Image (tube, rainbow, N blue to C red; front, side, top):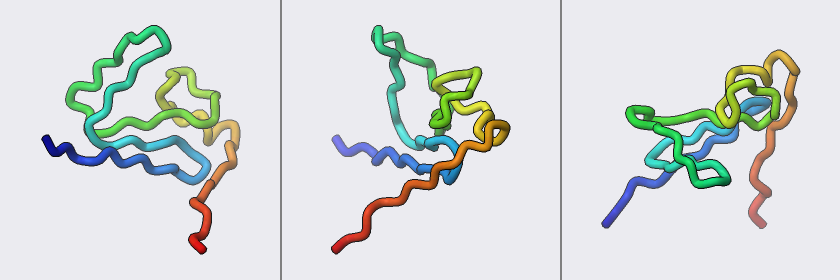
Length: 73
């Protein structure tokens, strides 16, 4: 059974954008209903009032983080 790969994009100074078929569950195993959502944005800054989802708080607190993969070589 072939499934499309999940794509996770690290947004500069912002959230993690997750696109593709995913299951999001909390530490107790409760699952969020993501029906009809082609993607979600997960908070990286810790300031969202809608955790684990991004609510744009990173802009208000001027969150800074733009990680990039290490260079090959």
